[in-house]
Length: 225
Ligand SMILES: C[S@@+](CC[C@H](N)C(=O)[O-])C[C@H]1O[C@@H](n2cnc3c(N)ncnc32)[C@H](O)[C@@H]1O
Image (cartoon, rainbow, N blue to C red; front, side, top):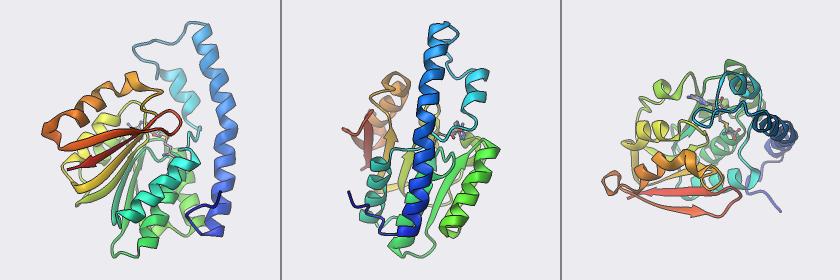
């Protein structure tokens, strides 16, 4: 299927990055199966030190169809200012930055955030290779600090992070302009972990309308009203 990006150089880079991310999925599945089998996973805290070490170099990229959907949404919104919670090696960031570039708006920016310094370094190299660095403000550190001030109204937010989805949205919520869209990945397959996130977006005081789009694992699409 044709990509909406219409940028062969960027698509070639994305082909390479998605292929590497996909190749890590088997490794991750085996790791989770082993931890489940040996009973070492704490159901209250499955992101323990061992898990943290294991995931430190994993890309865990957003699926390609979802990333292309984000590109399309950002084009439809004529998005100028975008926030991404969970950048990793920057695959989804490349789609968002391409949309901001293609929107040809002034001062367009994608604010990304990532706390693994090794991933930050590689993400920056990917942004350079794609020629998209000028559209990306990648903030290294814990998003509970890095997203405290997003510097102005936000048109679109991608939440691609398993355990701090709500803290991410809480920090950006007051900056979302009417009509802004927030998408969040795997909200069916990891529904338990998103319980507090759903309470927040369904609370009328927070001025959202939300629905689950049937991409694999569930993709929550939430509109600021
Ligand atoms: C699912 S991955 C993001 C994948 C990325 N959106 C993509 O498509 O390439 C989530 C990332 O969030 C990072 N992360 C987890 N908790 C974080 C936190 N509290 N602050 C900043 N980054 C965090 C992880 O290191 C991981 O790289």
